[in-house]
Image (tube, rainbow, N blue to C red; front, top):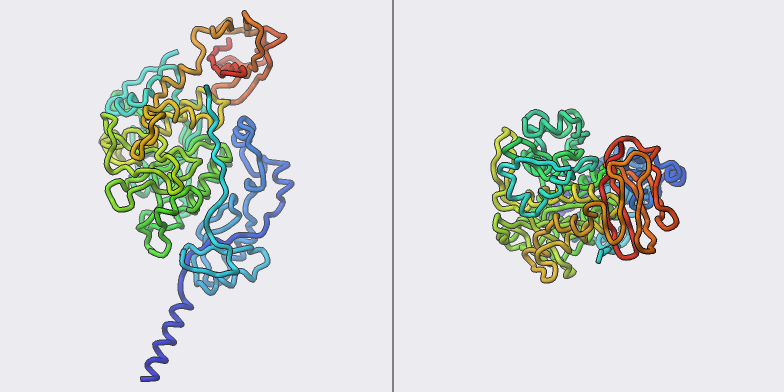
Length: 539
């Protein structure tokens, strides 16, 4: 009997030693930080640099890549598999033997280890949880006609068709879609318009590390969500931002469920930032139901500061992107509340309603664990129109579809007001919503009204508060007749959002446009109390 007990004890020890775990390995430093920041084109695209400059977003150490030599050393370590990396957190996500992972602390460049298993405790290892984040809420006191077909109601519910009518259809904006696969996007007619225009810029399968036919495989979920942004079948279906540019990233591994996918999402968000993406749509959520129950979160973790993906989303917000995410579909089960990254302060979280604007019972509710309003807003998610991979227009249920419907409208709104920050755009959307003064756990601030936002900020008929702007179209000089003494800051942007002129209207009454090419521009006028825009045409 003693021998049997000894054998069982030995086997238990061997099982414990061989225990496989997932963990984040944090590095102590990066290389060439100062030179990289001084020469940002070496680490970011020009579009990313321009977007950051436009919104006064600093380029800092987070933008510098992870030291690849460190990653190589980990890859060459027995029993360790590197699955993802993050420059924002200066870490990698690994899987391997727990003892081998523990031993990585002996490496001089490893500063700490954070196991995905919340029950593991090691005083030498920096614990996960609670990043720092400060929410920013900045408050403000030619016609395109589409036959939307089946998508009409979900667009008109937001009054987003008004954006299209005044020629804000996403042109010049770049949207990244994080999902599980995009079969048919490279072949079916529903995406032909975007393909023919060269506006599906690129993509990548982070799950399989494959850029060969990068994302046109996997689950059809991504095809459907993407259609609510970019789909176009005249007379049958139109997405909310049919003329934007797009990146498609697979971050969701449909064969598994766990924090690895959170790490892949953060890696994809970092790539999106470096490419100059403006808006990210995430129709994914993480909470419980993981393959390894020890890795699951509790509802108290939905505080926007705890999960890896939500902490990454907050950094993405700080980097100047606008993140739109589904609230989750847990309204009818025991979890009940929003899932991450929808709990993050830096995310515009979207719940679901039906065609009448009533709460869809499956939509995850708020508030967050730290008692913030979530979802932020709602859009059609019950029987939402989508395009499927066989090019048929159908309907699907879920906040997965509320989110892209909203994301496309957000991109068009930001196209109209290119100098505004992500925080300002998000707050405008909240304040325009039907329940802004009386939010609920089910609907947040309610259904936004994009027409009201534009009309509240736009100049009508070239005249506003004693200012007349002329001529329009303009050849060489744009004149401003001011009937009262006032100081206005004038900024002129291209249709793609790049600033080309900045003047203070006080001692002058005209701005020279001689050096500008023919085309459409946006003139922004900012006083101490208001901000208004006007579109002009340069001959």
